[in-house]
Image (cartoon, rainbow, N blue to C red; front, top):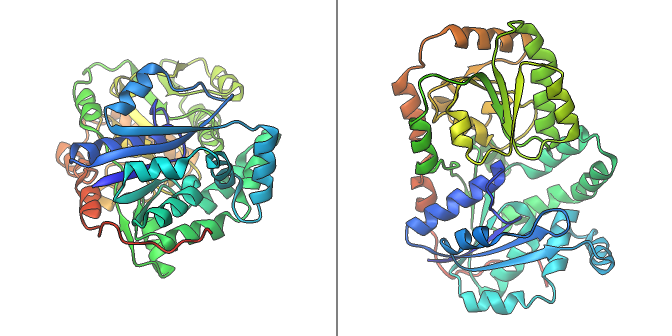
Length: 403
């Protein structure tokens, strides 16, 4: 099929869980023979524009790419405010920036058989284009978004960012339910979230796992036997729930592990100043900032930890942890939404004392059972994704919510 993919932002560099999930799915669809075009947005002025290398990588997967800037100009902000009665802030920003871009003409020229909305916030545009093109809409749900954003707002300490999250929570649940109701298929990342939406009467929900690409898994399989780090936490180092998780590890768990020789690493993208100060409080911690290849870092640790305390969907770092040869320790939230066979590969602990004990036991234990780990890895393959796409009826009109 010809598929128009609509993503919240540019999926490269794939330096966050959401971007990684989008990019790996696009590559899997391309490898299966589908023709992809991409519409996405860039937060102009806050992030750098895509480099020539990023554009070249996108071109290896996409036959056409359209990137629209969110500029925060006075006119754009006024347009977003006028739309807040209909849509959350993040949705309104993408709708407003798409006006005047000849987006409809570009989409018609792409002639897609389906629109794949990968993440919620391009939803107003996706619904409109699916209606105009008379093609089915498929939605990839990364979270129960209204719950996730509410938790992020509660945890955000920076005033302006907290205000922005509050604006995005306005009408978010209503809009999320609208998108799900209007989608021919919903591919949910989480088994638990999929069950929640089915309980709400949505029968078109299917669980489609996040993917781990063969290159990442192969690089992990070549990890050295002698590890540079005893303990590793990895992930983005700026969103409120990740900062909270890291604070819990450093302030409540690590003091219960008094060994001075313990080699601890924290690896991730864009650490905030608060994160830098936090990590400096324990001399055993090494910060690995913006690593070019996370697989090399992950493969060089004896124990991997996920200390997430809030969130829905599936925590991608936990899926990637399965492809290492390290012992795995997680909070219950860190393994939320995963199949039971995958959860069984983790020592799961909810309190600092239990978590520290699990780390101590993992450091003392022999290698984890290979057969159990191999069986869990097979759950995160492309077959479920391709089955959903193959089951679609091309060019079936969707009901629209936009005039």
